[in-house]
Amino acid sequence: MYESLLNYPNTWFGEFERLRRELDETFGGSALPSSIRSVAAGSLPAINIGRTSTSVEVYAFAPGLDASKVDVTLDRGVLRISGERASALPQAERGKVNVYARERSVGKFTRAIALADDLDPAHVKASYKDGVLQISIARRETAQPKRITVQ
Amino acid sequence: MNDDTRVTTQEQAPQRAVLPAVDVYEDETGITLLADMPGVARDQLELRVEGDALSIEGAVRAPTPEGLEPVYAEVRVPRYRRTFTLSRELDPARIDASLKDGVLTLRIPKQAHAQPRRIEVQAG
Image 1 (cartoon, rainbow over the protein chains, first blue to last red):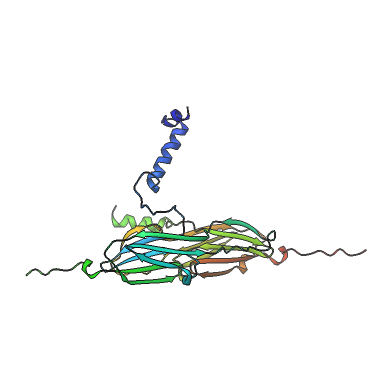
Image 2 (spheres, each protein chain N blue to C red):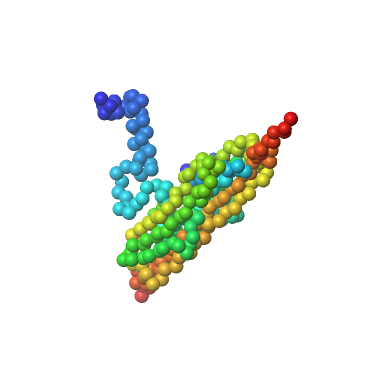
């Protein structure tokens, strides 16, 4: 019964169904292909990747970490970022403290990103500033674009 | 759309922003608010108290090498904005703010007269 109601376009349910479909299409919740290592939206850290002719830049938005405890590895073209974030909420003296919002994710995390094969694992730089971990990986010389002079 | 119309719409409409994740807790002397704002430097952060509304806003600025072309992006709106309504027993004039590693910490103390105090019962 519900099924037929949902499919009927001129009811309230039909309108909601149409809205849901549109939202899915806009925000990528539909059957679009996604990376096999993708995580739910809002997970820590969010990652942006950019590319220049000489390097690949990975930005991991990971606020409030101890940079010395963040682990970054590059193995066979897969970049792994793992670390842990402690809760900032006071643990002790419960009863005296009321917690109203607990949205910031805490605990261990690992994110893995498959990058292109043309990277040089010997030339990786990582820095942590304002809660953003920036990893810069050089591309191999052979993979860099070359200008060819026409004789 | 030509360039002229784009300029005017940018000026009129507030810039798109996402809600930063926050932790809020209260103890006897005030409220502490932590907000995740990765990529926001101190000079890009704006805190405002208007009446009883506290708003936090920050723009993400990440160092980008020349000729960077985006390949993949989960952070698509480079701005955080969130507004909170304060209640009367909080003292907006004494808010203490610090920003470290992309985490904004605000301490909003209660007015001195709103802090709990023990009332002595006089022996009569």
